[in-house]
Image (cartoon, rainbow, N blue to C red; front, side):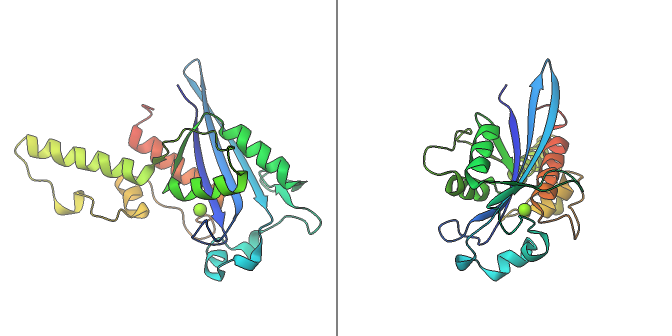
Length: 208
Ligand SMILES: [Mg+2]
């Protein structure tokens, strides 16, 4: 089975044609002898702020959380309370490429992360599987399935049990029984990647 990469990025803009990614978190799930192992990775990359949308920076709390030292292009920031390790941008690009090679991306609206990661890595470097999985859509599918089953047995699903468009990631998370992260954790790349993983695990019931 392919490895699964729960991903989240924080960016300087909603549009990857304009902005850049400044924080990347990946939780790589590799399965060996039926035993899954999750490994967490977090990097920050100094972005070009000239094209940044102040609102996007505010959402990810860029000013508060960007910890790449002034002399460095990027850093490993994956040690909780531990040291920030300065890196070159090309080293982060190589590391992200390596971690994601052959993996199925799982995210909350992963097309967004896919676009920004492709821009970061450059042409030809995106070697993850071409079909990312959106956890909100996965939960919605499970709810539609449940509604169908209720109807098949002559029942009537309650209106609040059937998803409506556009899907809300927070509503879908609650459908799956996972309380979305609160202030301080939401919109950090690692906090969001862990949230995606928890929703994925809840909706697949450990079957994937
Ligand atoms: Mg995020």
